[in-house]
Length: 566
Image (tube, rainbow, N blue to C red; front, side):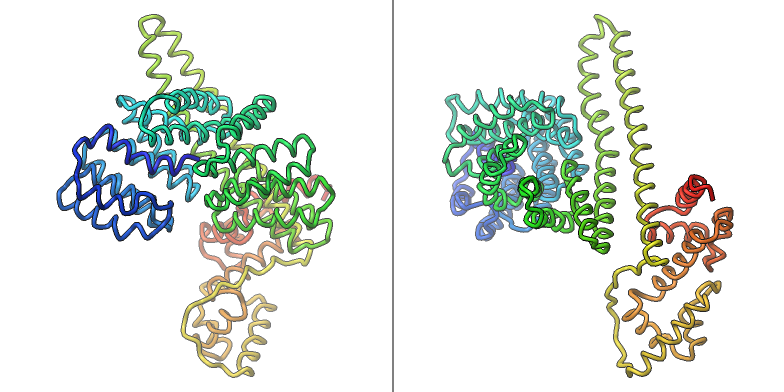
């Protein structure tokens, strides 16, 4: 990653390309914090007056610098994003195209590095790309190419990403060995090492293991023991450990993977930390130590729960955990990890459905159109046909992929629901959701009485009454709404509406499983059968509780019954 490189570059950029005037007061303020470590909030008391001064003087180039420094030294992701927004605002007011490139790239870096929001990051990179086409600043152009390459790599377009990283390597290598300011040499060396790391990832996925191993050795040699490149060295050690795993040198793999852990943890790069844990776990698994391996696979799940992000290559993590739970006959864990896998698939599917056409239409096609204009005088017709064929092919691939993923997802959700039904003939209750409201001190006997009445209400299917409200039910049970609401919140896993919806959807789901006549009913009839007035409301609740639309469920159930000869 070249996050710190990007955030530091603006200082040198201003010095050599924009701010030839030397403002002593600005310089004095920056000297008080410019040598501090990234995320050190002790810099902020000096950055704030810097920003205030720039605002007062309407010095937008300095204001961009101030917000950029605030991004670097803030410790919270939310603050970094706020300052990045302000940076874009200041760059817009400056009307300097190069500052706009810097601001949009840096904001994209926050989305990518701190949040792993590829959709939002790509939007920023493409915005920067528009401004970079006419810039004379080659450094900014290659920064942008690097980040677009990162998104391509994530999408699995490794050949295309590798081409971009090769271009970046050539540029950064040449610049880092030229006679320029030491800080610029440092920035270009960082760019070179991070481009090399990304190229190694592409080589690994393309099966180019010889090129990968050679690049890893080059990276380790270039980074050396220089403290400035500790993070980059950690990435190369991670790549080396992965290579050793594939070569079945599991002891060596564990050594290098563990050596890389401290720097990757310190960088707060939770995506690469997950990759590290994954291959440590795989190494232990290959050495027949399943208990140790599962510890690391569960760490990946913890990261996923916290950040709601997982790399496609780590999908196998959940398959391993599901199989481990099956082997140990832990049905609760098996169900949990199956749910996590479905959630991971859903998140990755959203990224791919958005990013895949975006990267082609907003980047590749624009590049092709620029080339087409150059070649138009030579062979206009051939160029147009090529572009149309590319777009047509991409559209077909995307359509096929989307249909396949949707069909697979529906099937998985149906199987999961069926397993739950077979297990205990009912749908498991949702986890209890804490309800923040004033509690009434109810006597234990009163609570028990209301629970008994609710049990009778459930057994007699009282919940299928149309237009049932908490007031009506309270009246039927001989109590008041406040008492009933409190008992339901504390003992039934949610508020009244959630409780009622769960009962109704569980009821109709059981009927669909047990009696095939209900499979012939339309959605409106099924909704009325369980007391829900609106077709749309029924469909939404069914999906929310069961994870599958009722139409898809009925279709799968009928296919299964036909296959069984029922």
